Image (cartoon, rainbow, N blue to C red):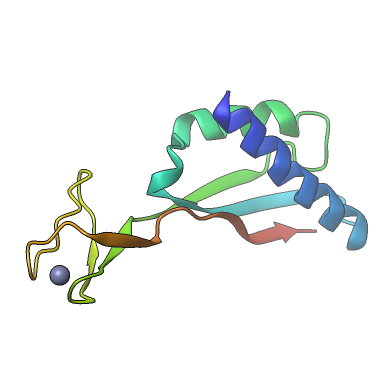
Length: 113
Ligand SMILES: [Zn+2]
């Protein structure tokens, strides 16, 4: 599972922070997830719960903040949000674009005690 591998790497980072700050209990984890990652919120949340079991993260709220796919036209430099895999520039109608956002996957914040 794609999400399971991602959750495992997220927990690698979480566990380092837990040690670093002597955390007893993690209350909330906020993740930034780009729409291009193909990550499903529901799958992500259930993988998170499985990996969190019997760790200080168990019972923590997982907040997933989606980042829309953003492209920049290589012809006119116009920046736009991509909807439904339509990469045509709305300004000049050319299809040459480069992706400038939407591939992100990182921990935005951790709330703990
Ligand atoms: Zn353009």
